[in-house]
Length: 543
Image (cartoon, rainbow, N blue to C red):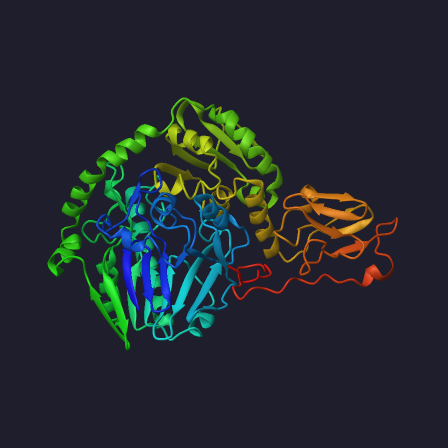
């Protein structure tokens, strides 16, 4: 097996049974904030153009580069789809022109012409853009684990697919915290130091548990070439910087008695044979080392090459084209109306401070309105052009766009609140219902509602839409209008699929169960092997 490193989490895997392109990223992401580091400008992209298979771990734009895929990857490639509950990734790839898909099942191996492929899917709202995954590839001679930046929980299952020859994993920051927060400098240094240590310690624990013969640091860090963000780069192994580079982590592993790290830069080729790993770089060794030992000079030259790209991106941002308060009101208020658990979780006001059009998202009142100096619990200071752009493009996931750009400032009165950012991943009815359903499944109480003489399970067994809002009952048939699934109230039978059932109980005039229905029991769906996932019955494998 040969693996060419493409930059960030990108891999081109060549086996005797076929080729796989994983997470190719070549164009700047997040409002031209992130660029691959080291630069992958000189990678031979023609070599990648006709893979047998394409694997995208998730839809974050440092893994999913639609422009590159549209322009450079042939549409006959077969997509290896992770077992995500929402088909957002499939839709995005079909929009680009891909038509061939293998629908994998979580932690179940697919064998194709001698190639064994296993995808581990993570589906909690906090995982990626409502989902993340990792890939295991075994060609009969070499077995690799491409973890990228996913965080699988059940490592006992992963070890069953080994032993592994190579482990590709994230070790460096890929988030806006703590850099964008308005904390005192000493506190920022303390938080940065803690995060840097935690992210490398977590990566080392994964490496030790997987116990591959070789560990290749990947999936970061990006670099920041805009003048406004340039200081985010770790130039001199600053212990408070959250973006350490590959040699830093390799040294960290060695300091902890783990001498298995191997450095790859974009264009490097790792050859695995008989338990050995040989890495050949596209540059002489002294030039490879200079990328990291003379990093500031390297990034300043990179910055000059990309300055026209950044300036063009900034010039394209819309200004004065959108009434921000009314647009966000019309967009967000219907979502807030259905986001019961999210609103309770936030339980406060968020100020989106974009100058003259500053707006409050009030999760208590479920209203959006122009700011009039009200108190707030959370505050984002953002260039209004970025808000206008998000509105015009109707970005469904602001985390995978605005927030990861690091082009904002944040403040909060109190501790970190996961629900704030989770809301901004769910800016469609489908997404917010998935998020609400996920959190509802984590509570010990089972929720029901009553209608048409029945007590009914509140969440649709399909994708957890709230049936009190999206359920329509006619002639004893309940239809979930979110996706059109239908259920017979008298029996709970699903008329759309054989593998789902809706809990229902017929009630008498006093609201008590009657007859045999009183004996019907709620049966919680069997859990996935990941303790943070709720069960989604698997699809058939098909191309």
